[in-house]
Amino acid sequence: MNTAFCFYMATVINWLTLLSIAVSAIETLVNFENQHNANDNLGKHSLLPNKNTLLSRSNSL
Image 1: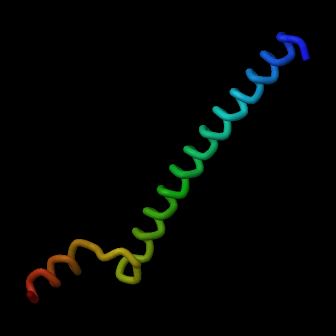
Image 2: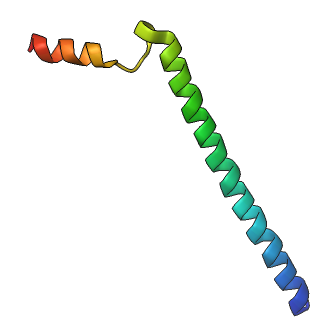
């Protein structure tokens, strides 16, 4: 293996790694937005408690 080929392969692997990280970050943002949209659409049936249920729980204590 000559030095140029090793440098080329290291550069390719580096760019593929950065691309993979960027794709993962974009997927995370998309999933985060979809989860919030789903929670807005579900309303009362959301798995996450909304502000009204938190207030009513604190008042009942």
